[in-house]
Picture 1 (cartoon, helix red, strand yellow):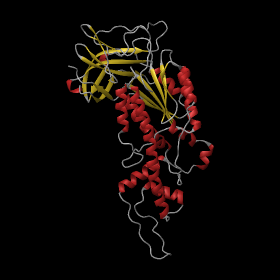
Picture 2 (tube, rainbow, N blue to C red):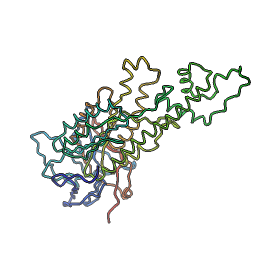
Picture 3 (tube, one colour):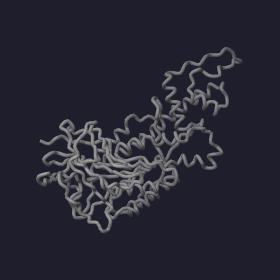
Length: 440
């Protein structure tokens, strides 16, 4: 995904309109647009939808509340951008008073959306990856003629730059193959048990030295006295004895190994997303990234593993720089297998299925929310209904012209929060915004 995207019309122009006169400016490369008129503005794109994902199109400027680093900032202008217009409607957008924070207006040709289908092949096995690819293929067929769509398979696999060439994307999707690797668990450890054992052992510090026994006939102490709650439960379940201390040590060792293995797999996937967002910074306009994944398990406890630190926040900041919004589809294949006949017969893991699913989707939820998107959990099918909702939600959005304070203008990312005073409204707005330095 290298280079820039070309399209008929002046796609890469950024326009600001002054309260007194129209002034044309160009956008900084790979940054959010800045509009210079009587004041400098930053463009903040916001989706406002109802519970069904249908855009609310009648929200006025007085209903928006925007804060940067917790301090309220003035919303100078509000402009509605609609991609799926009724046939009777005109493609031309009206000129509003005040600075219009728009990266597309004006243009005589209709301008579509830019989508990237990011498939986490490392989380799927071969069979499940085909279902995800087929759902993505159906999504491509429903796009508007003016939309661009690209494919990015990570960590490895077919990749297609955003294009109007649907056939190229379909061929790429045909080549998507799941590459999930699993570390065989001797003790049938689930992801939540791996997290809990590592967290509980970490909280206790170093394990105590086992008590020595005298003579071969000596009976070992049933428990060392410092087993964790989870470790003890697994010991009873897997070893069938409370006196097998070697089993305790083996379970703990396996939990540590699996924690590091899962951590490496998650970081490999995140590195792929990081590269994608960096490359999308070269593309003009607003982008929507749709991540299809079977899950990226991360710890929800202090000291637990897998632990990836603040990578979700980093991805959120990178999405802000790339002007990209992420929708994460968690296709919960493990949940589906739980209720299969074969799994019910052999299942030795009496753990909370809801918690297992939450661990797998936790990281997806974090970086999608930070980018202004959301997590969609898929329990049945491969995400067809969720993809339909994304098409509805992205059919319209608001572009706000926000006046930053002088203290905001440092060329760095800042915490952003957008609220809307409207009934039955869900706001999709990134939590980070890049505020370029003030020009002299």
